[in-house]
Image (cartoon, rainbow, N blue to C red; front, side, top):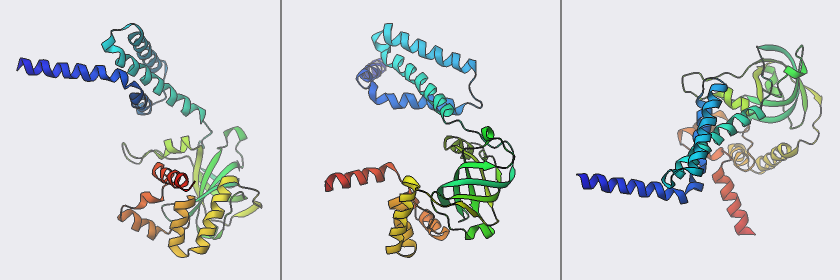
Length: 282
């Protein structure tokens, strides 16, 4: 029994020391632990958390620089943990933008920067540069998302249009259950400061001018749907141009039931396939 324990101990020491040549592969893992620690905190970190992280980084630096050879991987892991935490904090503050303090009902003006559909199959507009009645510019969200219902659903949006509508907006909500999906966090990093809906007609304040990549995507989706009618064209447009507003709720439900809904995402796999195709063609 003692020989087996000794053998296992030697194997573990060998595996540990082997990580000295694999530190680069452990970089994203250690960074991820630091990032996860930040997002697990119930509130924004105060001096106590920063003292803990800086202590970990200092100890890690000391171990990596002056510690025993066996402890070198641990020192690097501790430093990378601290760096991951710092990167998460920096990113959260870099994307900082005003969020609506309380529910708002009134006129909203903004430029259409995105078009998609809600879970209830309603067209949604992502408005940039919004203006509100009675709210100071420094407290105005940079982006808002409005679902079109009732008479507003008859509006046919185009990328780059400046529209004005009467909307009922509220701050993005948090998880609906413990450990559930945090829409509030996702909205923060997307720069989305308010969400809501409109039921009255949407008015065009200014016609579309340019629109950039988003306008090109809509144009490409329209071309695809012109040559491929119905839901076939809608799915093709979603895969090729990322424009999913033409897909009906019935089709989405069918894709989810058949576990094929992931095909609509512009994922790393799709980018890899596209890059491989272009490389082979060239």
